[in-house]
Each structure stands twice: as structure tokens, then as C-alpha cells.
View 1: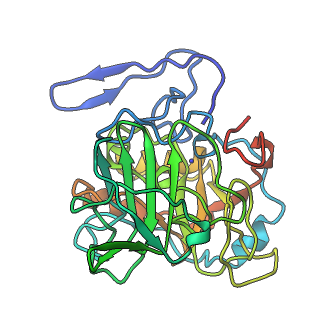
View 2 (view 1 turned 90 degrees about the vertical axis):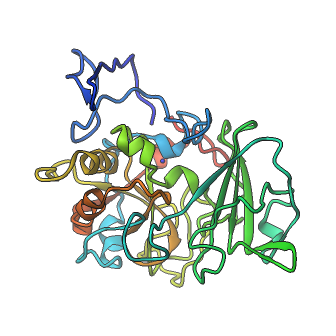
Length: 334
């Protein structure tokens, strides 16, 4: 959750039934795992011309050559690495028959409403483009996180709320945050968002259009159950239960080992694995260990979801991303 030197050329070979990728030209870099050439450009959110933040944003930063974090072993010792990853989306059993975090795209003319927040002091007090068309994680009657992710396609602004509900004709949420998708500006340090880490949710979601195109160009949001009461840039907030630095903090970033074999995985799963090697996972919230998130979309193939359940947590290491930082208050990277 992406910046590369040089000009990278992508050659597309179209057939009547499918899109296949030709071998990259001499000198072009390929994503880890060889899924496809990296073109350095972020893919737009489906239904918009808006990318999920600029190309030099933290979520798009290539971490494949960054050093291992000095606390990698300590953090992983508290993260249940004896299990496999769990894709928290797709046509599986969970919060709804097709679950994940839905993304709602609206026109700039969409009516705005006032939202009452539980954590009002750390929420952006503007009017939000919520309405009868707003899709809420798990549905409006869910007992889960009930994230609402809304993209204004006209202004490329992102609105996110947590514990979203409408009662008595009024909108309520636990917290709310707004970003310009064209900017790297972070929230004030210490402020939450719709995520415990104070980060946006959208750029860390796997989205079907990018997996279908074999072009996942960002880090992926994930959760674990026991975290530190600390956070690392660019995270702005934490909600852990441990004071010790030996526990993973919000904002910690993890990379799949380069040598992890993709033999036997479907093409879509190979693209996700390549992203985990190139961009990694970002710890963004408390939850079940090694659950990683994607958008709610009926198109997710069962084979893909089942393949992603075969990636072992023990194949990850924490990386030191401090060298990427340009400024404390910006998600731009070097």
C-alpha cells in the first residue's frame, strides 16, 4: 500500500477469450513472483478515474529489498504463525454470502448528511455522502465492524466510517475520516479513522478489477489479535492491549519471503502472492490473526479464495520501512 526508477514497458497480447501477458522487454522489471511487469502506475478504483492515492504513496511502495525489522522475530512470536492466511472476503462463509468490505462510488452531486460520531474528537466533522445506496460491511443489521467506504468520483475524495448505522432517520458511526485520493497528507498523529491504525481502509483492500488484471499494485490490510499500544509511521493511532514493544504495533509491515513457491496456485492467486512479496501486508486493525481484507464483490472466484488460504503465516517477515519516510505528516515515500 510503489515507486520504481526508469521506464517500464508492458506488452499486452489480446485474444478473443482472454488477456495474456507477453514476456517483458529487455530491461523491464517484473513484480516479485513474475506475475506481470510493474508499470509504476496505480490502478484506478473501479467505476472511477481516481487512484487509491498517488504513485509515491506508502501503500504503493516496493518493499521487496528493504531490510528485516530488528523486532521481526519478537513480533511474529506473538502472531500465531502456526496458521495459514485467511482471505476475509469472497464467496465463503462469513458476514454475508458474499462478504468483504464494500466500496460505494457516488457522483459529486450526491446529497451529504450529518453524521454523529462516538469518537467525535478524532473524526472529520463534514457532511458525508451517505444514503439509501450506501453499502455497509455485513449489511445494515450486522453486528460486525460495519465499515462504509464511499468514493466521490467527481472530487476523488474518500469517505470512511466505522460502526455505521442509520437510526431514527439519522446517521451514526463510531468514527469517520475523509481523504483526498490525490494527496499524501496524513491524519493528525493520535487520531483514529475507520481503522484502529488511523489509516485509510480502501488502499489496503484487494479489489477484483486489479486481481483480474493481474495488477495488484499496493500493500494489503490485515489484522491480528494482540497488538502493542504503539504505532509506526504512517499509522497515526493504536488500540493495543500490550505496552511492550515486543508485540506488533499498528503500521507494522510484513513481506512474504521471495522464495515462496507459487507452484500449483491459480493465476489470480499468483498475482496476490506477487503483491505480498513486493508490497507486503500492513497491520491496520485488531482482529483475527492473519485475516487480510478485500472488497465485497460477487465475482471473486472460489478457486482464488481457496488458494489464498494456503499461504502460511510463517513465510512472512517484518520489514523496516523507516527509510521510506519523507515527512512525519506525509505518506509520500522516497
